[in-house]
Image (cartoon, rainbow, N blue to C red; front, side, top):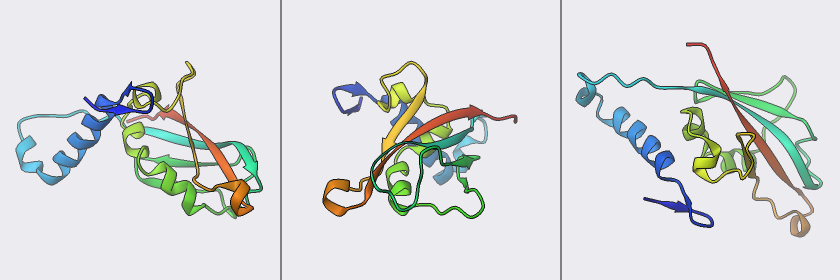
Length: 139
């Protein structure tokens, strides 16, 4: 059993990520077992900006499809700090683990919240809070 933050249990998220890595490393061990994988589309939106972000504006968004395809609107950039903040969570969220189970929300709206690591008041930049929505896709 693993814990995240204020004793929030995160066991299912870790188990799902480890199981996915194990399936990739040892595919021959799963010849008799059929694992149905749920892949959610993730819509990542800018919820709040503290300071001045040179990349994002409120409401900007990008999408992660199939658990690994990053779609950015034409003419928009993507911030590497934002991606670094998202990396530990995106695959598990795409596999359908709820944000509550991962300790990424305290709300009942089932959206995850993360923020980039820019220390805005010290760097002159902007800390961006992202809202991540899981959207079921057709198989």
